Image (tube, rainbow, N blue to C red; front, side):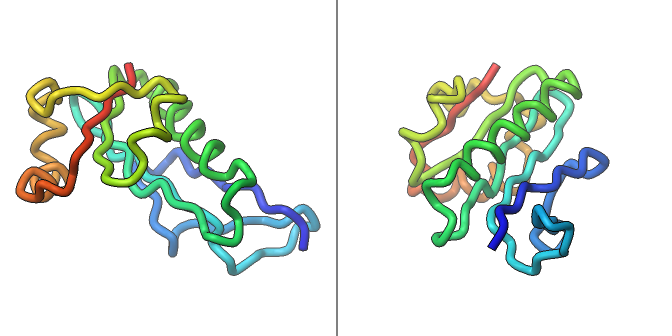
Amino acid sequence: MASAEPVVVPASSRFRPQETQSIRDDGQRDAHVGGSAALELYRDGALLRSVAVSPDLKGQGLGRRLTEAMIDLARSLNVPAIYLLTTTAQTYFPAFGFEEVDRSAVPASVRASVEFKSASNQPRWSCVSAWR
C-alpha cells in the first residue's frame, strides 16, 4: 500500500477523525485514519490535543509530522504558546521544544477549556507542557 500524508486543513482549529482523510500517493482516497492531532485556539495560547498514531503506523514518523504540523499552524497564526496535557508522552514532546510547566503558568483562557478543566479534576494528568 502506498504511504499516506496527513491532510492539514488550516481553516479548522480542530481536527476530528471524521473530518480528516488521507490521499494515497496514487491519488485514491484511503478510509484508514493513520493518525490525528488537534489544536484548540484560545486568546492567549493553544492546546495541543489528541496526537495519536495507529499502532500499525507507529515508528514511521507520522506522530512527528502531525506534531510539527500543529506547531507550524500555531506559528502561522502567531500563537504565543502551545500547551498540552499528557499521561503517557512526557518524554516525547520535549524533542519539539515543550517544557514541563506548573498549571498556574498556563493562561486563564487555556485553563478555561473543557479539556483543562476536566484534567484538573483528575490527578492522572501528570504533565503540563508548554512550547513558546
